[in-house]
Amino acid sequence: MSRYDVAVVGSGPGGSVAALVLARGGARVALVDKAAFPRDKACGDIVGPRGLQVLRDLGVSVPPGRHVGDILVVGPTGRRVRLPCGEGLTYPGHGTAVTRRDLDNLLHDKAVEAGATPIRDRVAEPLWHEGRLDGYRLGGGEELRADFVIGADGATSHVGRSTGLTDERRVLWGFAVRTYMSCPVDLPAIIFWESSPWRGFPGYGWVFPGADGGANVGLGVATLSDRTLGAEAARLFPKFLDHVARLGLVGDPSQSTTGRQLGGWLKMGMIGTTPAAGRALLVGDAAGLVNPLQGEGIAQAMGSGRLAAEAILSKTGDAAGLYRARLAAEHLPYHRIAAAIQRASVGRPHAVAATARFLVTIGRIDLLAGGWSVFWNELLEGAPPNGHRAIARAITWTGRASTAHTSTARWFETALPLHANRMPQPALAEDASAGVRLEAERSGVAPAATETPR
Image (cartoon, rainbow, N blue to C red; front, side):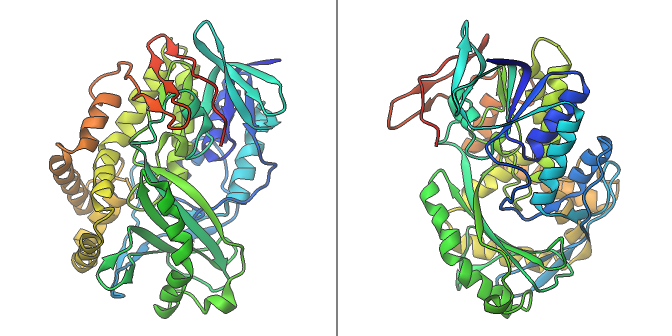
């Protein structure tokens, strides 16, 4: 048996940043991941402005990559809008294209150099002591005990499920698939696509500059709680590649595809997940922090990893409460709106098509394009006082008013209130096959029946 102050499960950007901050703060940290590093990961491979700022704050240099600025948005008919990427008061005016293989390996190594203990294994069943979470049994049989557990194990987080912090009936799921192509790309592009006329695809496609001079091309589909729909992204991906080739965004897919096709689950908009209770804290995709409107997740993962680590190091006696409050203040104003928009759009292909066409029409007005960019990329907090910020603020207020009485807004009021730093009760999660009921109580996360990890 090994004992640590904190066990971090998952060594992606969120987990490694959490481990790095904790180790620098003097904590004994175990950094657990099933994979050997370096390893590949399905992703758009762009670290956005807020993510770059997190790395700067931590004194970590980003691996060599490509400078990424403005974003091109392509509508269903091929009409294009250029969204500016401006300098903020608290973030740079650009992002960086870098492969997850390089980024994750760098952050993992930085955490280990700071003192975190790397453990290559899977977590199995949770361990309990006097009604409190006390770590996990590993796949190899070893007991890993810790005062706190940070779940950074992705959208399908075992930590989230086994501690009752995830209500999968409410989660906004998505599935994305990507490949690499040899053709050069100047501007990152988000593509609103119709698989047939006036039937908008319930998600987005992308063509991003690759770190090595080629292109990262992908397609993501929103599925709400029905994860069986994730196969749509993979099924329609060849058709989407033909579409972006006809638009001139990439070359012939049969000639220029250089990488294998990878897919992965996304958990978006924060809904359906209580980010912390007792001794368990969730970060990144595990906490559902992926942007529902444009799919960014790296910046949110690193930022939440830092917040979780700082909450534990604060030794306030309620790390979970402090983390929830800071996470809500930073992300809830945006995600409460974006999650409601996403939930309302899935299953309404004609409305999606009409909305996409409308956006690329009004987006041709420079002031509106700038405001759309600030809002869409969750950059309002820290945006400089100008017309773009004013438009983004107006979009936020309009979105808040129009979604205030939705079921999504009601869920957030119960599970993650902005106005209080009290312990929310996570929704009960039911395992349909085993009838397992999980809950979290004020004194800590309550033990649950053993569940077979997926």
